[in-house]
Amino acid sequence: VARAAEAHQLALESHKTETVAALEERKLALETHKAEAIKALETHQAALDAQKAEAAQALELTRQGLEAHRAETKETAERHLSALDGHKAATTQSLEESKKRHEELQAEAARVAEAHQRALDALRAEYASTSEGHKQAL
Image 1 (cartoon, rainbow, N blue to C red):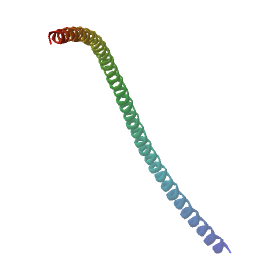
Image 2: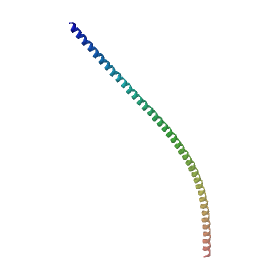
Image 3: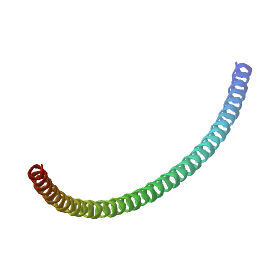
Image 4: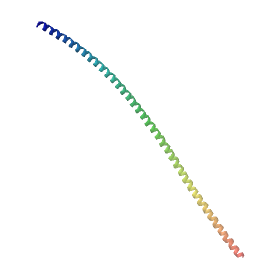
C-alpha cells in the first residue's frame, strides 16, 4: 500500500508539474497574444489618426478652395454687373441721342415739306397766271 501510495504521490506530483508547466506555457502564450493585440490596436489607432489628419487637411483644402471660388465668383459677378451698368448707360445715352436726332430730322422734314408746299403753291399760281395770260393772248 505504501508503494502504491508513493507511486500515486509521484504520479500526482508529475501531473502537478506538467499542469503547472502547461499553465505557464498558456500564460506566456496569452501574454504574447495580448502584447501582439495591443501592438495591432496601437498600429490601427495610428493609422486612424493619420487618416483623420488627412481627412481634416483635405476638408480644409476643400473649404479654402470653395472660399476662393466664392470670392472669384463674387468678383466676376460684380465686374459683369458693372459692365452691364456701363452698357445700360451707354445704350440709354445712345437712345436719347437717336431720339433727339430723330426729332431734329422730323422738324427738318416738316420745314422741307412746308418749303416744297410753298414752292408748289407758287408754281401753281405762276402756272395759273401764265395759263390765264396765254388764254387772253389767244
